[in-house]
Image (tube, rainbow, N blue to C red; front, top):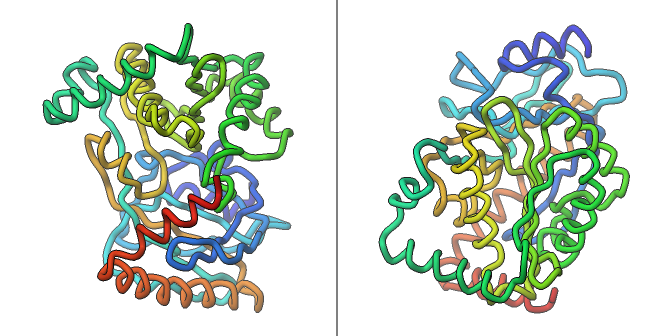
Length: 328
């Protein structure tokens, strides 16, 4: 790592090498939540959990003095939200772009699982238990499986991709566990350091849902998850989340379950707390990146206005249902 990036990491309060990973970063252009275009940039992406970043300032840090060779961007998707800050800030050599702000959900893993369930209403507890019971009655033996060892990673990847290929995240956003089979090598490397926790839910031997998590200290962060719509009537996604959390509360290996970036209803439902976070990109100041940032910000503003209009007439949910119906 360069001296400039080491200084930047120190400002964020994270190790300079451990938490940055090279990625072909996608900058997605969405209109009312639906993808219309994606640009790709060679980038370093911060993989630290939300609670591992410590900032003293009320705004995101300034860009590093220089970028590592062959890197066009840095991305920090869990930057703590402070005072009102312009979405785009230009410096002589870089562009700082706040691409979004969202609620970041988590669960404090303390006490028993039964104690955690008390946060829900009696009706919600009854409904969840009924869904789990119904699923397990027809699922067959060993329906919930955990994968942690390097020798298990190829099997975990195969089963997770078997689910992911059927999900809207994969079809619309390419936001599922990566399609590249070489990703297995990264899984094996992470697993050798005790950093990977994979979970698969099966139904009669067929994978119905998966979750891929990374461990950092006392925090387990969800990176990818999804369920096969074929098992939507059995609520496979809810059942997997319920059983995963039950395992974490029983094992007490972690203190925090981090739902990762993205603001989704199911995360709010299961969480015990949330914090506001910025998704911040730092890009080299080139003509291409300049156009990319301003085009993305402009489309976001248009899309946000359209969402509000569609919500007034109750049309956005119907559009989403229409698109999903044609995907599957």
